[in-house]
Length: 132
Ligand SMILES: [Zn+2]
Image (tube, rainbow, N blue to C red):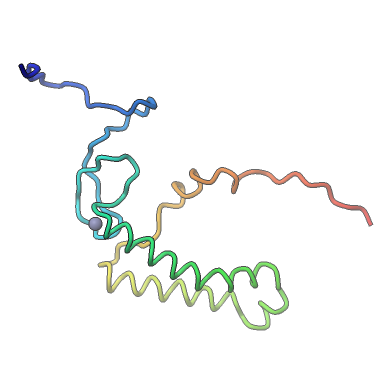
């Protein structure tokens, strides 16, 4: 026999105590279409959308990585080659591509979400300076 229908029944919650609904209406980060999220923090309506999102980030990240590392750790060379300008140009190209191919939807996650998932980035580094 089926359980009686209860109006205003509580939404099922995760066993870890998170009170966010397990199935809620979300907007896919990749295609922008609404979908019912069975998994919290999934972000995507399908495997294809998740892969498209991650593949673009991998490709763009690979382009940025070498330039950023040189910018950070080889400052004289970075200045001579104007790497900061090159990085900014890349970001502008990515944004232009997003405008055309993604109807202007950003291709990056919210900064607060990224930082919340990486608390070590906000940690204060405690190192002793060597006295010379
Ligand atoms: Zn999608």
